Amino acid sequence: MNVLLSLVVIATLLFGGGMTVSAAQDDLPDQPLYALKTWSEDLSLTFQNNEEAQVTRLMELAQTRTQEMIQLTEAGRIVPDHVQLRLEQHLQQALQICSTMDDAAMDRVLLRLRDQLR
Image (cartoon, rainbow, N blue to C red; front, side, top):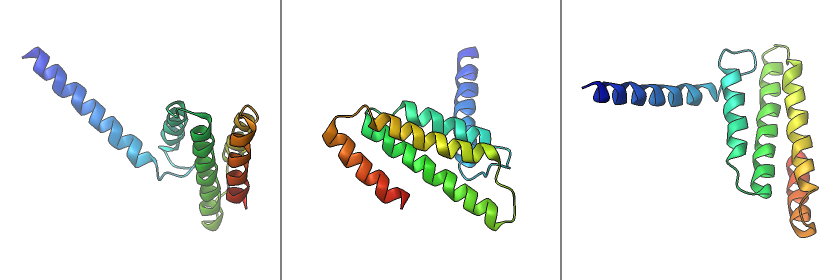
């Protein structure tokens, strides 16, 4: 009976935690679950299996930061400094990863980066 109860409790915590992380994905920097959102983003980077996938994910995150800044500005709210810093970190990390790639991969990825930054 104790084992069954333990399994139910663990399943509830896992499911509830997953729902909380999912709910945090729409939060803006001045909302309560934003820290959970950025933590889950950082975690997602660790699951990228190659450099190109890491750069792609970093550019997605840079786009997310940009959208957050736009939403805050349009709502007349102040953009916290840590959001701008995080955007810069995403871009710097993407460029740093590119610098370790072979020439063909770096050219391919940098062209995508250029297009996304426009």
